[in-house]
Length: 295
Image (cartoon, rainbow, N blue to C red):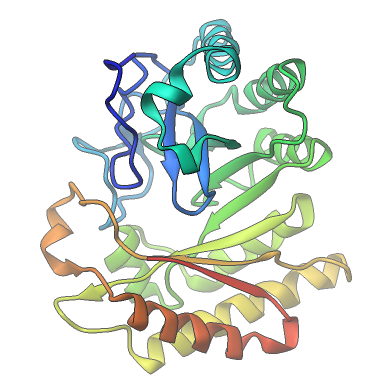
């Protein structure tokens, strides 16, 4: 652990704060308190390459083999420290001293671990045994591996345990996805992944918004983005008429990107981000979706 008095902040999500391999704490601006992170990519490997990614030394690849027993021990020990030790007092600002979630996030795509389903099972058990059954377990994902059976099994497990998915969807054209997320995929393909995710587990869309080379997202870019979300909803309801999104989480670039593309990115003002969020809300008003904003 860090020395007493060194506080977590929303702008510092350093995975090494806890000195553990797989478990780390952050103060999450979107969750609104302490988020207990689960990092299944300590090798800094991801199958996407997002321009705004804060992971230094990011490489293309998948999660390494995970020592599941070590991860479980780290999580149980850290939850005990948060609940019964001095970590909150020494490292968390007073207004954030509440455990808001346990989140699969970290330094790459967590679902690339082939042990993901087993890990989800163990994390839920550790949460429940710590007396935190009301604390949601969240998966923060790019959604690219949703077609894998072990990922689908894990999402069903999450849903049964009251968990949810935050599904990355930043753009509505192949060109913008390539520029922002560093991958080649048709937006309709990613929208169908989102639709499948919605059918398996309660799902939020998470979208990062920024200026690129000083230019705000255009009206055409916002329109294409909304069209793809609407397409995903239609696809989901073809198999499950009750399927739907919980909402859209829009956020800005609060922390520094460590990718070569970082120089293209500029942070939006709160007013600019609010204006785009209002357009998204209006565009999806028939769905009655919640749109939240984290500058």
